[in-house]
Length: 532
Figure 1 (cartoon, rainbow, N blue to C red):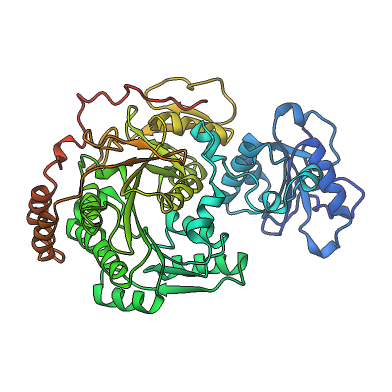
Figure 2 (cartoon, rainbow, N blue to C red; figure 1 turned 120 degrees about the horizontal axis):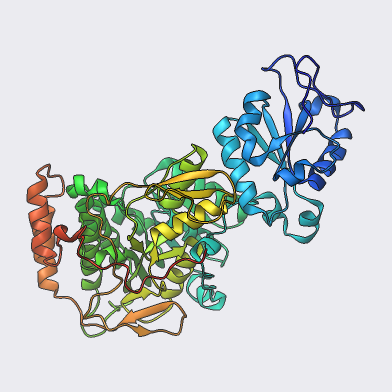
């Protein structure tokens, strides 16, 4: 590679001579990142740009050593693997990335390093991508990691006619509308012609963002952004009386397992009594369908979060007619239980993305830990479709459980990096890029090595929708639910953790926190390794 004269000036896109480094390291400067072909095309485009519209170009960063040997119109400063060193030697302020969208791993790797370095990144689609792809895929999301590829299977597609049958022309209320699942349900519903979309959320930032997105994509759609905390039962009833929803998707919940171990009363208050608040109001105003978003952690729970979601399930089911499970007069109450969703807020993929941007290590709790996974669009689509099916307890078919370690290794490789396990002296596979550590941190309080989607007594049956199973079980005991509500109501604001836990154990007798992490368990049996 050609070296540059450190005492020379930077190159303007309109110069015809060589490119030079700036004398002033604080002056604006730009590098081009791409293949020899895309760099040449970007350089030609920059020559036609107004002189004062772009920073001076000081050189290029290519993908491989072989690319560096190819004759260039722009001097090569290094490869993608050298990006940190290049920035240290030539402190550029802007990077123009131009790579084919098929090179998603390389694009993501470049973006992660540039973000960590504090460098402004601009993306220039290739001519081929601009001509062959939809604008949204070219300009929004290029280089993002393909969650289906990481998971190793495609997600199930949505039956549009079925979704339309439950959404079109109806007033749809979504609680927790700013969350990962709630916001995706909102985006899907907005595309199917509801008469009104009602977004309920207690986080003003999250509510503002989903309302902004819906307004931009569906400006003609009547909608309301409702800043509200569902645990206030009286106010929730007043809200629903005014809003008059036909369909309710209840996604609001506390979900972080370790936090709920420390704050069990908050979990009881939000997950149980928040659900009760919305469900009671929905029943009072005669909604057509109420759907509770539940979790696999509600099955044989080993933590507070799972136990409170189990209680929420029991309460919602108790509202149904004992003679016709799932129906109370005009209203039908159901729940949908599923596992983890890839890419949701504070889940493993966003955490790993930040860890990669910071240079590692990428953390995994335990080499044998497994989870059920779905993509966010898949989970949201199946939840909405379940509202159009008869039944009370729905369990999504999430395939075989996935080993978290396999997921992490695939995610790291998708960023054009080579994972190296703490316990292994060499990389886990032939090197594909710079190495990054994968470290084991140990399970957190309340976590178990593997989750379950159904109780042994729940004999699941298929439904007309691929990916949705139903349990045609017996109604819950309403008297026991009434007693449970009365006893736990007094503990909603309690600071006595032991008392709250004792009450949870009483009403969820299968709750066994001693099983949150058991070395004698055999979680790897039947595990589906993710395709590398």
